[in-house]
Length: 125
Image (cartoon, rainbow, N blue to C red; front, side, top):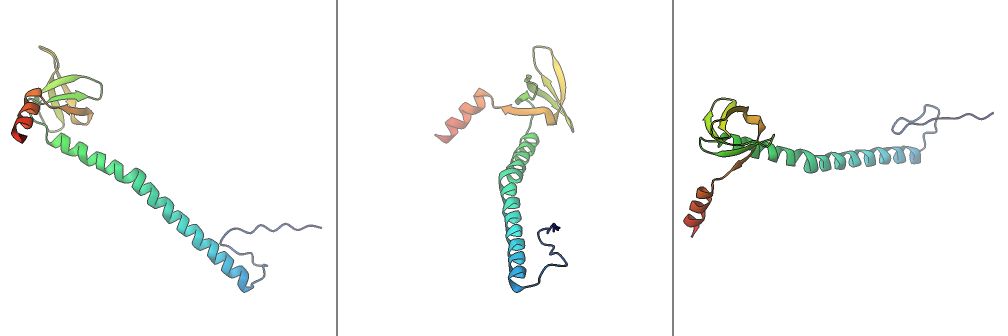
């Protein structure tokens, strides 16, 4: 009695009529879908990928600028002063006699010493 036809977007049915109105609406829908996909990918790039690249670049610069005597905070919350720097490992002194070796990837922040901050403000004046 009733025949059901399923038509997928962009793939016309073989038995469908081929009038010019049907062809233009199908190509218009395809173009609209492509434009929406391009807008989606542009939004993802500017909202997710670009900020992530900036954070990675800032982290790399921070790691490369480490030097002996800098005070750092690790991702675990340990605060210490850098004693030795190797290729991928940093040795820090966290208490009077406690020395820890941590991987550079686990450094969360470099804290500037109060003296360095004072020198920077004095040199600006």
